[in-house]
Image 1: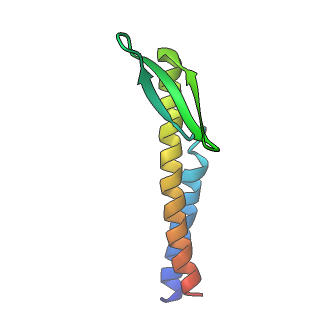
Image 2: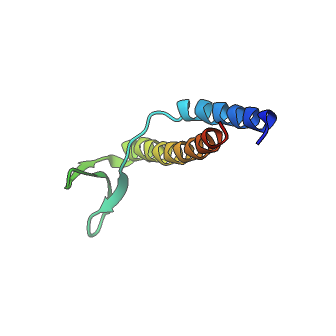
Length: 92
């Protein structure tokens, strides 16, 4: 791989890092709906073998959904950065 290709990888890495910085706030977990007749939104998180659950309501469910989506996008971006950095490292 020549210097030009490595510079392109570094520019791509910079772009991905910039997008990663804008992916805030984040929360790991999921939104679940519980109830027999009237399903209500809850946020659930498994942490150290225990599940933590909080009631959200409709307004907070929309906010939590965005946070969860941000988390998923952040993990995708971390994977992209890892692959790019592996290529750069391999060619140094």
